Every structure is written in C-alpha cells, then in structure tokens.
Length: 338
Image 1 (tube, rainbow, N blue to C red):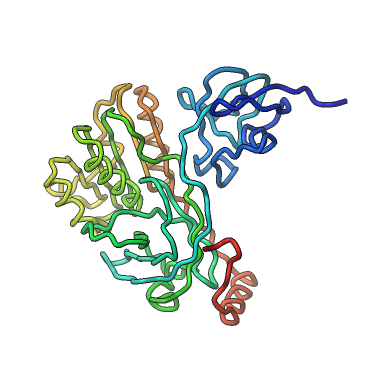
Image 2 (image 1 turned 60 degrees about the horizontal axis):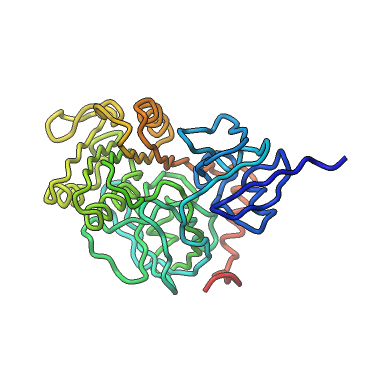
C-alpha cells in the first residue's frame, strides 16, 4: 500500500511529499534543500518557521519554529526559512597562529576565494591529516580584517587531537579544507533589542554579531554578557574596549570574578528582564545555551542557539591508526574545492 501524500510549501514553492517525511526529506524529494548539518537536533541549522499546517514537531517547537531534521509531516503544511549563503567547500592555508590568552589561540586561514558567511554562523575546518572541527569565523579582536582571511578563536585542550597541535604540527602554511557555512544563529535585519550571551570561545560568533549590528544597524539596542570559567579565560579585552567606546554595555563574568571588573556569576544569572520584543543569541557551553533558552522562551523572546559541543576524542586503536595515517599523509586535494 502506498503512503499517504500531502503538499508542503517551502518558501513559496509547493512540492508533493509523503506523510511521515521529515521536513528536510520532504524538501530534498522536491529538489529543495533546507539548510541543515548534523540532522540530529543539535546544531539548529535546520530550524524553520511553521506558517500553517499539520506538523509533528517531535518536541522541537520554539514559538513558531521547529527543527526540520526531526519534525515530520502529518498533512499539508507551509514553512519558511531565512536565505543563507550556499554551503560550499573551499581550500585554504594557515596564515598565522598566535596566542590571545593562555590556552586560547587566534588562527587565521587564507582562502583561495571568498567564503560567504553571516555573523553567527560556523564552518567545518579540516586541517590536512586531522579530523574535522567546527569553528565560528569572527571579526578580529583589533578589527584588522584582511581580504580572503578567516579568523577563528580556538581553545586549546591538552592531549586533544587537533587543538593541541595548533602552533606545532599544524603551523603556518598547513593546508585546510573549509566547508559551510552552517548554523541558524546569525544576525537578521531587525531593529528589536538584542541580548548576546556567551561562555568561552562562544564569544567568537557573539562578537561578530555585535560588530555587524553596531556598524550596520544603527540605533539598535545591544547588550552583551560574556562569561568564562575563570578570569584567566577572559581573552577579549580589546573587544571590550571597542564595545565600550561605542556605548555598548558588556558584562564579564567568571567563577572567580572580583565583582568589580568581572562579576562572580554565570551569564544567565545576570540577564535581567526580557520582553517578547527581545532577540537573544547565545553561544558556548550547551549548559549555558540551555539555561538561556529557558529564560528567553519563558519571556516570549526570540531565541537563537549556537551550542559548542566538545568533539569526542579517539582512543586506543583508533588513535593509533589516526597517528599512522597522519604520519603518512600528504596534503590533500578536493575536487569540490576551489
């Protein structure tokens, strides 16, 4: 017996689909790609607006939005999503690696062609011979942007497969493959007040949003809360000075804060009153993003999430095999890269 069919309209285009299809599968069946990445409900790239119709959100609904990778059609429906740059693969090389604080690096990658991305999105970076990692491109802390150069803030984890090799085995001239952009937590053209919150290197996408909104959306109210586990992890002093110079309030927090320049609190504890007019962007530790999600949605605000999940590290035979492969590997080529 054939499946029941329905019509789903995506950004104004009507296509036939099967009842029970996920929104992403329904789109692909009609040759329409809804932006997506992990397809497991973590990355939020596929969050879409439900305009009407019969959709089982599978517990992913936030206001009028659902995740396209998990939500399934129960009948005719209409959905929409904001346009984003097309996902592409591009070659590049490491241009520079410099410490910006103990345990934190600024990595610059020179690309063979421009890589379009929206403030708040992320890219998948694969350093030749190493597994891929997701990083958020950002504005340089001192705003010295270069053409076709992407800037990343990366926390170094001792004994990790990738970050611990930056500056040693991965150095200037190392080949990099970049794929993206991904992510739904990007700056929109609105005038609603913005609250930006982060922990750790979640400041990277938050900083890029703040700069773009300040320079390109004049008069928009912006407030920032940036947290770190300890004061030693507060690496964004240059950015703080620039923001304060433009009259943008930023609060720094840390577990060992002095309650003078750095508050001894968690970012979500300092949010204050939100209204349904607010747009909240949160990036960093999943626990921080979850806490902010509850606060923002509880106030009726619009919420965009960019949780940073620490990559699982290989062990035992997998790690040994990976090391052998890396020792034998030559710089890669990619047919899809420019």
